[in-house]
Length: 214
Image 1 (cartoon, rainbow, N blue to C red):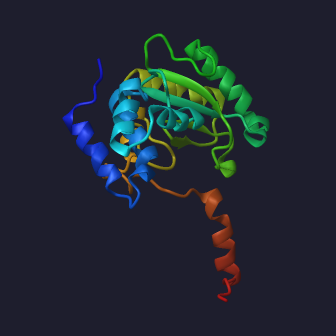
Image 2: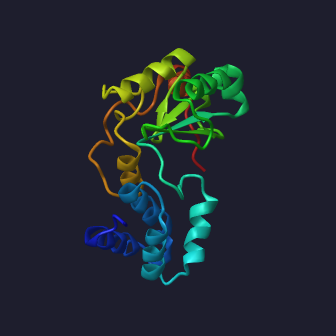
Image 3: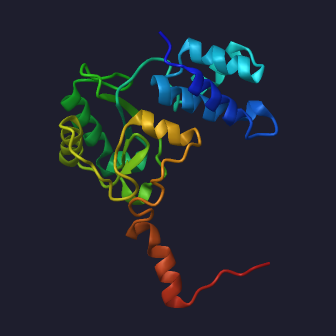
């Protein structure tokens, strides 16, 4: 049974109305569907297609092209371990293996208790904090196997997890609603840039370097 109700339909329409061309709202609309149902269901794809005047095939073409979208139900928390070369050589492969062993699942699978889905991801664009683990799109920096497993244990026990940067961990579906464009009031929670990211700025200030306008 679909969880898409009148409120969801109204919010889908609200997203479409943000754009001069309503179909430009397709991707945030898919994020909203995931915030409601946990994935892009057939019913959800049909609802979006009807609102935008698209075919279901066009909607599903986008939902299956981008890895941010699920076509099957997943866990409460999405765990992404960066597998790109830099993270890998900095210990990312060991982090992935520890998480995989701890949860008893592999890439693309969900734990039996429904709490965690695991995936290998390519470059989280946080190389200055490698190796990186993502939890519901939030960065978990400078991971080790031990730190990663402890974080998962805390989440499973209902204990608060606060990244070094960004907002505290809630759930994947709650973060999907934010990606759909619905503000949750947490944008200023936690710091946004850590010391490694600010070294260049600090060096420029110490040397009096300034950019040239043209």
